[in-house]
Length: 191
Image (cartoon, rainbow, N blue to C red; front, side, top):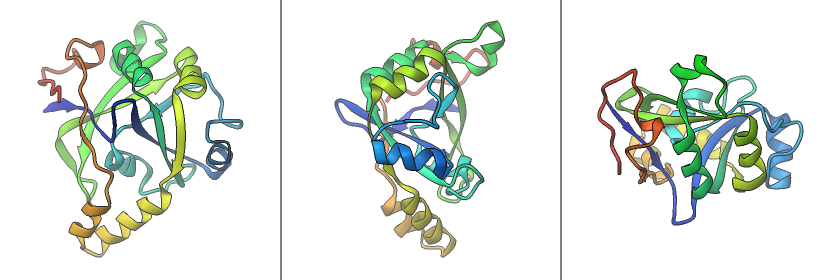
């Protein structure tokens, strides 16, 4: 099984997804950045894969994950986080500010695919940098999540696929700690 970062990105920014309760999402959307009751410094997980986020939040239907946010961040911040990440299974060796976890990517029906998708956990200083330095915009994509879900349920996979954000392999160094997950012998895909 391959590790692969697929994302919507340009030369300067990358989109990651998070799902929150309305109590956190609405103030963030109004401010264009994360503000209280969001707590910088606490662990927060970001996912560059839209469909993996849909799997995690149940298309925005799980409790406290009803609002799906597309968070545009700097590639400089994202690249730093990927380079600094410690695989989740090694967390017992300390409390790193950035953790990485690789989970099976998902198809439109949220079934697992044969490659693994990245999740980054940001805590401590990394979480504060995410909030204070890296975020350049936040968009509510909950209506898109519901639209794609409804098209999938109706069996119109072509229309659902056409609505998905365009994600492509993200270029990242194969030597990063995050890519050398010693728990597996999976080949790393480097876009």
